[in-house]
Image (tube, rainbow, N blue to C red; front, side, top):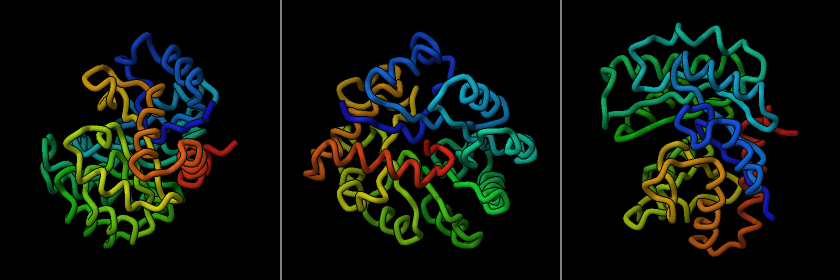
Amino acid sequence: MQHWSDSHCHVHDERMPGGTAAAVAAAREMGVTTLVTVGCDRTTSLAAIATAAEHDGVHATVGLHPHEASDGVDTIVDLLDEPGVVAVGEAGLDYFYEHSPRDVQRRAFAEQIQLAHERRLPLVIHSRDAWDDTFEILVAEGPPTRTIFHCFTGGADEARRALDLGAHVSFSGIVTFKNATDVQEAARLCPLDRLLIETDSPYLAPVPHRGQTNRPAWVPHVGRFVADLCDLPVGDVADATRRNTERAFPATAP
């Protein structure tokens, strides 16, 4: 059995089938031994921290999602001092839903980039329909040494811009969707040493489970699809993405 890492999930989410503990156990049965469970506001960041404390191999991030940017970054700053926090984020811009005003999103993103620098932590980025502003702010603030573009939805051009900044690019179940040709093109050009895979569960279940509630146990489906897409042995993709998760999030290394 290959061993996998899910570089971005929300296994603390109450929608996990059977509950968090069952989802972690199911992941382990499928060879998924490292999970990064990601906070999006104060409440979910606290849940991620608690989940990581309860389960070996599960690691928490603390962040303010662009949807929640109106809450203010000050609502999550103190949580970065909690034991076991491995990254800042997810942070970024979302101009598709615009649940928070764009100017508020941009300010919250810039502030979280600064926090990543100050705490010497990796930065997890969410960017949807906001590529130019995402890159503009990231360049202006300076990309942290370890920057991860999670649930990558861009194409080849956006992937090159991310890679040129030294970032890791993480592919979710979207890459398995038939109409996701731009994302698939980005995956093909991503060097193996910068490639990450994730579920973003409970969202975006990969084929053949599309439309169901996603779970970390299904990250191998993403990995196998990427391996086939890039004409690589599945074991090579499993090994590389596991190592890359440890490089991107050093605190997750055994």
